[in-house]
Length: 593
Ligand code: SER
Image 1 (cartoon, rainbow, N blue to C red):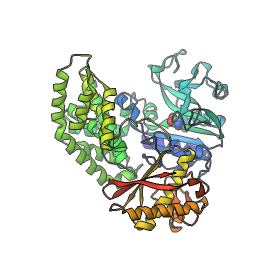
Image 2: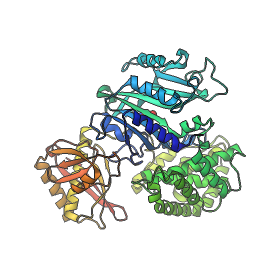
Image 3: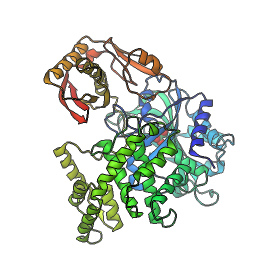
Image 4: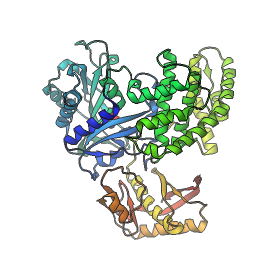
């Protein structure tokens, strides 16, 4: 039996022994990122370094990264899919390439001193070749050199190409390692290409040597990188001979706690097992999102809406297990207990997590029964195979707080479908009207490092300092979001800004732009950065050393970059909106003209 804690440690120890620096997990909520709600892969916080910035900890890195992928939410409850998961990863930033990457993966997996997996249970896929990159015969040769049999290596096209999104993304061909989950030993004819149901992917080694630009065209990157990712829960399950991820020790403890709240037991009825699994998965994700150093609470906006969906869906599945009283905080306490050693932020933010769950559960339970009755009323008017209209689903959302996923679950149980396109139309219309809700931005994407966005990033630093000068030292950044069109900046301040204050801030920023101040960075420890007067609430995201960006003598902030080299290129800065974001937090939208 190997626990997740042991696997985490082994992985990091192995890559430390190969000269890698360990990077702590970055926040689940990406910073300065317009196109993505959550961190979906270990490489995401490292994008600036994959495209050429110098990382303070060097060119070989390894991490265990907290990730959330909500695009798989409908699959949750099967044997392998999770919304929250931990990704083990190692990176070469223009350092080693295919030879070492493949050899080390093999050594870690098969050497008895490390995981000691039987090589006969493993198979490989490699990139089949296209107009951008050739058939990856080089990797095939490297696998063969390690003793892998030819019939265990297959060529695939789409599956062996990895990118975070289809534009503005580093990318490249990959080679993936699969573990056999069929019965007995794999037959010679069995491989992941021909019999995918017998194999589970455990590790992906991406040879990240291209960049897909705005138009989707690939060009070589300045450096050849390696980016690997291995799912902790999946690999731990496989090492223990488990058939599904819910058998790992942390999930077992969580499921036991759910059993204590229910009069059903796990393992009795397959349909109910799915509900146990969904509750365990969804509440684990919600606890990690709320408890993140940059955590968000349930709301109708962006990440907050995802948290709301996860919690409400867990409560609905709780009802299927006859759990009629508030229970989410009992489960959350078990989750915190299981993960506090690896993620101390959960214990630090325990009160916040409990308060948010209690409030959300109280709220949802107030309308759950009525909403379920309303659903029955609607569904009685349809015969099987008919669609539940988008407006009926939207009414359940608006009046009873049913996220689309709940209505879809209920519909499926009756053999109905929901007109999702119409629901989304109504949702968009509602968003326009209320300007508060957002849905649909759940897929993976990438921080945009286009020239314009980089300018907005530098403008954020100027704005931050200008606000402090005009409003006072209590101003602290609470979030930001950049697009090609504008910047959005959230900060702590109790009252609405006056017209004069807004004007003063604009003038100060424009003065600094006119001065054409140089922008540069220095690497130092967080303690030095603090002593040096740098601002920033940046948890130890980059390990021992942080970058401090200085804009002339005007501003100093801890930040990963990238930035322009001189402020003169920014143009004219103008605040187009100042509004409340939440209690005690103001939001500014500004443009560069
Ligand atoms: N970026 C790749 C993945 O997410 C490898 O880390 O699978």
